[in-house]
Length: 469
Image (cartoon, rainbow, N blue to C red; front, side, top):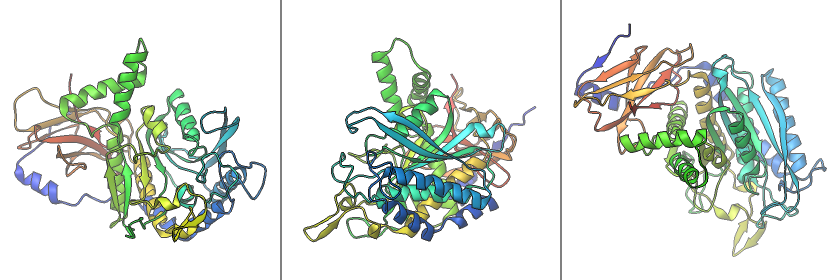
């Protein structure tokens, strides 16, 4: 018989509000972060730049120039570090042909380089986390496949970060599966990522979270201010839900599974005021929490938007198919070093060259990724269902939840925040109980969730507390 737990008084609220969150004590994660080295990241970025151009329609036969040489080198790089670590990575090419279209002038093979670290838990391995960067590059003209397009920041920085994380984790144990992807065709319309997302949706892959790293190379903005202690994390899961439901109503006689799920989540949001509590938002909070705990002094700035205006990244095809997906990007961009022909004009040097990349900053962003991915992949799955009891008038809050299906649950943590706060502000550990009453903490004033923890303190993303039908 389950034992009900009641927590009393305003004193709890104050202590929970001001107590620092417990930091996970996991030697595996510490080892992973120690292995990420800015000097190796610099070497990898310079190697990618040395291919001249990595345009999606550039040379595929040369061993020294073009996208073909670049993808072969990425695969060899991942295989070599996996062999050095005696790791568990499975590295392969995943390719398909895109027909001529808006940004492709002839049938073109799009090749993603994918390394998979399989989860070791029979249940946990069904959960998948995916991290990506795109290895294609471009000059000013998006169709120019011949001119030099170094792409040091956009996006050799993201690819180098993904390689660094994969190599650091190659021999480590995780419960869930992690996929490391260097994707092609981003500049031509997110083509490589779209294929990965389409296949994942068709195969009903359980992607718990996807992160793309795109333009993470510079701590120096075009305003001349250096911000080496901050990275932006774009997170918005509401817009794809709304678009899916509206499109489904207009164009289809019935609802597909994502549309049905989106409709149910929108109804919950409307009932409870959870506009920033979609699975994508919860994933972003978990990424921020783990990244900042493992790398003190480095801030993950949550931005409640899908992406920057006039731009889009490889997380978008995943969002559109119902997967939680995020984008890391440097805090203030310098557009003179993005999508530019190499030239000098008005006293400025244009072009995306290694000269404008802060390699130690890329390493810090890579560690933020790695801390979050390793922690989430080692933690148990979130509770299956969390319900906020609204059946009676009360100034207390009672929560119930279903157990995580995985066996490594050391306990559960109830988290809550004011309705205007972007992050969880308060927490209370509930042990292995599956219900908790917070006395004197009004359900009318806060939003709630429940996290599952393992013995080392690794946390799942929060499962948002909905209202029983």
